[in-house]
Length: 508
Image (cartoon, rainbow, N blue to C red):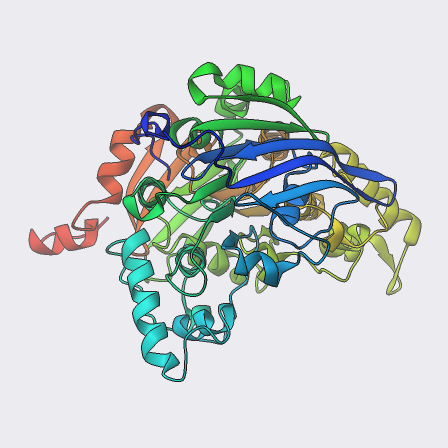
C-alpha cells in the first residue's frame, strides 16, 4: 500500500557551487551486439541532488547505472566522479573506493547469512579484526537511520525475513557507515517490495542531514513517487536523454508522452473492471495465521490482498498455490521474488514462458518444439517482451523478465491465477497491458487473487481483503475503496477476532 503524503523534495536547498559535480557523463555509448543500449548520453549531477531517472523497459536505465557503478565499460564517452575522470580500469571495486553505492532491483543478499554477516560480505576488510561488534553496530545504526522502528534484528538470518524486510536490509546495508564515505547512491526500484509508510521512511532519509553532499540517482516506474521526491527528472528513451526538468514543470501526462508511452494504467476501463461472472463454486483459501478463517475467490473475480507489507499476504498466496497442487483445480503463480522463485536464469525466454504449460505442449512425454515456440512467441508479442525468444532470460532487463513471469502464469491453463506484485519493475505501458490481460482472463472465467503494495493497483480489483498479522481486518468492494479506510484498517490495533473475544462474541 502506498501513500502520497510526502512533501516535494524540490523544496530542498541545493545551493552548491556551480562547478561542483557528483558525476558527469559525456557522450556515453554502449552496444550489446546489434542492440544500442546507450546513444551519446550527456548527464551531470551535483552533490546533494536527488535525480529521478524514468523511461520504459529497455530505455537504457540499467545500462546507465552499470556504467556509473563500474559494472559496464562504455564503448565511447567519458565518465567523471567528484570532478575526477575515471580511467579504463574503472570497475566495481574502483567505484566503491570513489564512494559509489548501489541498490539493484534484484536482491544481492546472501539468504543463508545473518544481516550483520551480509554487511561483512558487502564491505570485505573494512570492519577490522573485531568485525562482529563493528558489523552489529553499523547494521543497527543503518536500519535505525533509514527505517526507524523496523524491529529487524541484525542477528536474524536474511532468508527468514519476508521479502519487504529483505529489501529494507538491502537498502540499509548500502548506506551503512562502513568503508569510503558515500558520494553517490544509485537506487533501482528501491520501493518495489515496500509498503507506503516504509517507502516514506526511505524518502525522508534521502532528505535528511545525513545525506547532505550525497547525490542520489533514483530509478522508478512509479511516476507519483518520482514527482514527490526528487529535485530533477531525467527522461531516458531508446538509450538517449530526451528531457530534463524539475518535477513541477512536468505533469504525469507529459512524462508519459516523453517516455514514449501513450497509456496510463490509472485510467483503466471501469466498465471492464466492474464486470464479473461471479459464477461457479468459489475457491476457499485458508489463512495460515488464522486456522478456520478463509478468503473467497469466485470465477470471473479479481480479488485483492492489501495492507502493510509483510502482514501475511504472500503466505496466503503460497498456501493457495500449495493447496492447488493437491486438488483438482490448478493455480498458476507470479512470484514477487523474481530472482529467488521466478526466473530460471540459465534457460531461454521461450523455456521460461512455457514452463507452466509443458503438459499441454507435450505428447507422450515429449514437448512439441513448434507448439512451445508458438506459445512463447504469442505471449512475447502480447506483452512486448524485448529480447530474443531463444536468448537467455538473464540477458533481459528486470522489467522484461517480470513480463515473462506474467506471461508464464497467464499462458498456463489454470483455474486460479495468483499474483504477487506482478508489475514490479515494469513500465507504465506494460502495467496497462497487464491490467487488461488480467481482466480479460477473469472475463473468460478464471479467478484471480492479487497482492499489491500499491494503493492504485488495488483499485483494479473487484474487491479487496485488508490483511493484518495474517488475518482479514476489512473487506472492501471496489466502490467502497478509499485511502483513508485502507489505512485505518491497516493500522487497527485489534483484529476482528480479538475484538469479538473482548466483547464475548463470536467471529462470523
